[in-house]
Amino acid sequence: MKLEVKNLGAVGTATIGLSSPLTIFCGPNNTGKTYLSYLLYSIMSDAFLQPLQVFDTLRNSLKQNQVVLEKTHLEEFLNQHLQVVRSKFGNVFGLSDDIAEQLFKNTELKFEVSDEEWEQMLKCSFEFRYVSNDKEVLVKKEGRNVVIENYSEASQTIWTLIMYRLLKTTVFGKHPRPVIFPVERNSIYTFKTELSINRISLINKIQDIKDNKETTAISMIENNSRRYPIAIRDALNIAYDVENIQKTKSKFYDFACNIEKDLLGGTLTVGKNGDVLFSSLKMKKSSQLPIHITSSIVKTLSSLIFYLKHSARQNDVIFIDEPEMNLHPDSLVVLARFFAELVNKGFRLFISTHSDFIVRELNNLIMAGSIAQYNKKSLAYPSSQLIDYKDISVYYFHFKTYNSKTTTVEKVLVDKYGFDVKSMDTTIEELNEKANNLYYELRDYECKKEKK
Image (tube, rainbow, N blue to C red; front, side, top):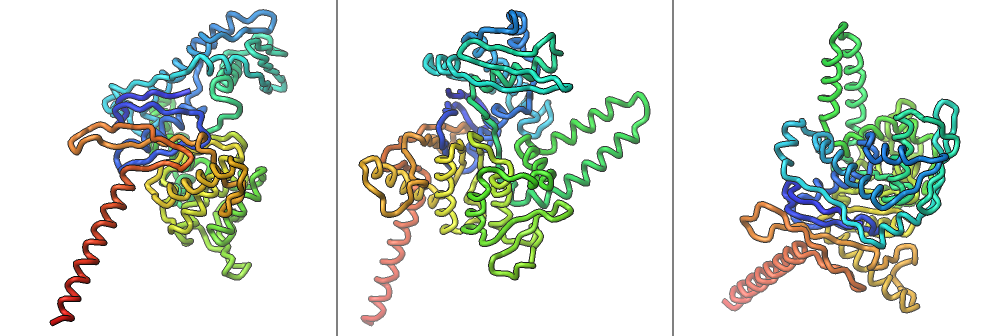
């Protein structure tokens, strides 16, 4: 399944596949990579769950607690869901509705689904339970047939929740939960305290509002929620709730501990007041540093590590904007290997990067994976880090001409030898050429000087 986007900020047109285990956005600054990541995250999230017309259609066709899904139902769901997200661009990008409407008035969104993909969606089988007021509703999808047990004239809200989960799971796959790590993550736990103060302040202001002032309260909440794009807001809310989140362990806890050891050289914990603390392996065991005075790499990776330790689920869709931020080249190489391991553990990754080191190491892992397909062991990497080039999609964002105002998004060829990023290669080649010219010019000057 692909998403076709037209006129989204700098992006003129783009068609992005949604099913590759690893998707990479590359290209110069200000070409729309973050805009597109925010959009994809919002489409996959549950942020804009609303009653849709297709839900009523299915409710009307319900007979003896059974309903039959057709391709038209899935098409309607995808189209109506996109319309809702499109109408909420103010929330998606952290803008007022007026500004969002002006900036994105020509934006168009459309899903592209092949006949084979429609058939796979209709054939898939799964089940889930919904519990409300001590009553459990069991939903079983076996191919096109859906059985809803213990259902008896559920409220519109409950029906909306059931149908949304049914259709979303059908079209996006089981547990398609998106998680995003925006560039602001390096200060996310510093923001946490401010967020808490702002929430308390907002509640106090609402409580002070007199009768017949409901619209004032609503407008205050609306204005507060538009302070950040939804992706950043969700990240802040997770940081705010980290004290509760850290009470559980995910099945990837040990994997996250390896990242801590290899990249951070220490351990992240949560204190009694919900403060994030860091203990370096080079310091005394009793020494713990508050997150705001730790090194930049600790700040940058802390949210990803907490997620993997405590809330990660297989099949999650992870968005990471500029993973190279604040990391030394040797750390970037290690991080690229961890990305490969995440893909092999069943996650889907969307990464936007400017790092030639990440790209080069991913190419090494692709070539090592290609060698393994010939029943040969690669000397350089364990099997857990090998990547099949068919699992990677790469998109190159760029302006075709200097005066161009819209970005062209090209799908890059990925083969058994990896992939190239034009802007990175061009810059490196130019620097190498300048360095060589300067080196030989300097050598020539020094030789002439010595002869004199």
